[in-house]
Length: 280
Image (tube, rainbow, N blue to C red; front, side):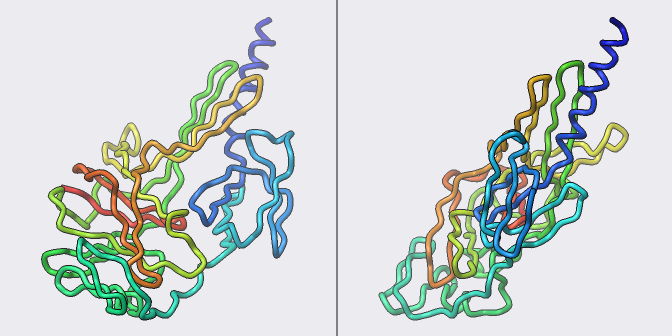
């Protein structure tokens, strides 16, 4: 009986390793899929979902996948967003409460011009910026590449794994006021709907280790549980903040949180990059 118990224990202790041995698909719409790839071609990817390895094979077009992180830790970019479109004199929407004539450039506080912003090659596609309403200054957010951090708990007949995307340090060097006075704007490459893949998230602060009291910023991502009956995974979305996205000009959009941002650390999560800031 003792030997049988030990065999069961060892079997379940291996569940976290099997959970982690997976490929992750980062879709252009901002979603993530934990999968086991069965085929990668020049036009499509075939995979099985990690929570149903005995289930059907799914097929997704390659141009709908931004990047794949393979089980061996290597990554491959599948689709690179194109260049920004040329700005036109088409009618534009309002910005920060002001409106423009049908054929005039969009301007906001201190003369922010959405058409000119869209044409300016100094500002990159798919990267949000802050416009200070008082000075009109365009400020770049803190940019970082997320690192995956996973913690596992194993017990007889049960195992769980929680994953989060981590950004080093507990505080961004870009500070904004909880009283407002700023706007977020972003240039979007053609063919991409900003509402599909722009995420605004609130960070959790987590201690690096028992021996290191320093904290890093974390965005919870996936939670996986396994038992004798199998494993299941679900995406964690509780740290995401709803936003409205308004078109200002061709390829230029304003991102507006639907609720006031309380003092905390935040980031835009776009195409597997963090653009971080803090609210004081």
